[in-house]
Image (cartoon, rainbow, N blue to C red; front, side, top):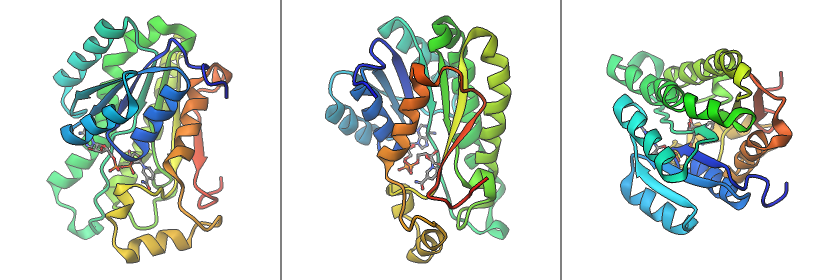
Length: 249
Ligand SMILES: NC(=O)c1ccc[n+]([C@@H]2O[C@H](COP(=O)([O-])OP(=O)(O)OC[C@H]3O[C@@H](n4cnc5c(N)ncnc54)[C@H](O)[C@@H]3O)[C@@H](O)[C@H]2O)c1
């Protein structure tokens, strides 16, 4: 991919303070995009923005709060003059066993992982439509949304399956404007999210991966960059699997 392939594009990445979101932000910047980094973790966000340099603009945004999301989208457009690429990456992954999941925990997981993406899409879509064939929504789902996961909670798997449905429905809705909507479905990836898992949960997931290792965040970011580029302009409604063979369709 050419290093300036995304020059002139403006992106929002949610959950960008660390892990996969930070790797996505870094890769988009390396290919020329300007960027708003959204996260709820203010100190980590500042650190990430400092590391990424002046192309990255950090904003504390909780994707579950509609007013905050709408205000933040407006601020991005005021600052950069446009919005071309929305990456819905913010997510949480409690490992609570099915029979112990409380109703508030179920609602929180669905709020961050699924409602948050919906709110960001709804706030951003008029500006993405203005971007026309450069407009992109890329949702970070999970292999758990496709095959139920190995160790993760059922609420997590359900939220990530919901993201795939949201992607397909929005792909139809936004196609007339030239905007594409796709998913990336990572398998187990080496981030702080999985570092917090018990050794037993991690080993169970690892043992099921035919390629014999976890994904690295920059491998997920490379797929997002591709989907954001002009080369992927005819791909919409798709889910790109990056799971080391854990789930083969
Ligand atoms: N790590 C994996 O194995 C894996 C596998 C498949 C999919 N994913 C998905 O990839 C995405 C990133 O995962 P990660 O491993 O980098 O996780 P992570 O926990 O390392 O990072 C997630 C980021 O999201 C932020 N966040 C949480 N709630 C938020 C909210 N309400 N508003 C804004 N930001 C919020 C966190 O502060 C954090 O910086 C998640 O959606 C996750 O479900 C991860």
